[in-house]
Length: 268
Image (tube, rainbow, N blue to C red; front, side, top):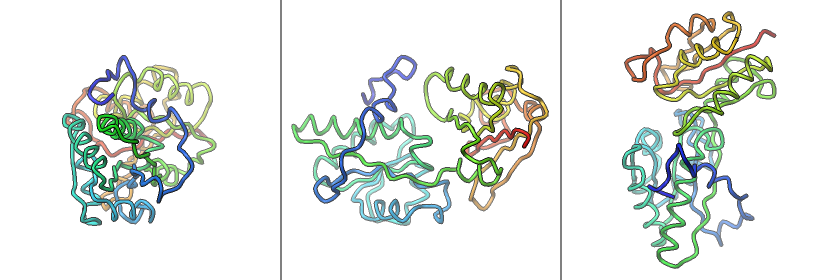
């Protein structure tokens, strides 16, 4: 799958990651590879289990901005990447794993909320290298983290059972995700927690879309930015006010960073 899939045509690596449940846990026998959610960025929100997986690894792989949050916790070799060199970094990581080293892949927040594409790519790279060497692939085990969505739900007081969560923070077609997002707000009167996609589907764009689908322009919209960081900010709008920030597709076209969660609150 690595380097061979088309996210607009499939297969999506998130589907690969979710294809089967994890096997029974036997960490000594399995010697697993870990996919750790590092939380929203503040190390106080990194779980002890995730921290241990990072501390004990021989090699850690992840996007540069994620690795930077945990690099002082480990003496492991750090393989950092962006979208363009992601496949190369994961291939090197898989080679190290197949050679017998312990490895941890790190993702922002909690992979179960947003990050299954990355988990699928890690899992596929490990499997491909094992197949090339004709050895049994080591299992990839997800270590959940604290998601910025959970923090946003706390800040906005939107209980998860009354809230629809939609992540747009992924590659590929977003049509079905956008439809679900709009239906939750317009038809089902549920609160919304959404992870926008930098930078073509930012909070202003989502507000405009919701208005086009018939949402109440007076609904409260919170843009939660850099949650748990020292420069955390909560921007408060009506949906109509937030839609004024719609348009464009670049960093310079929005007042918000890429570390944002959009919350749309229904009246209580």
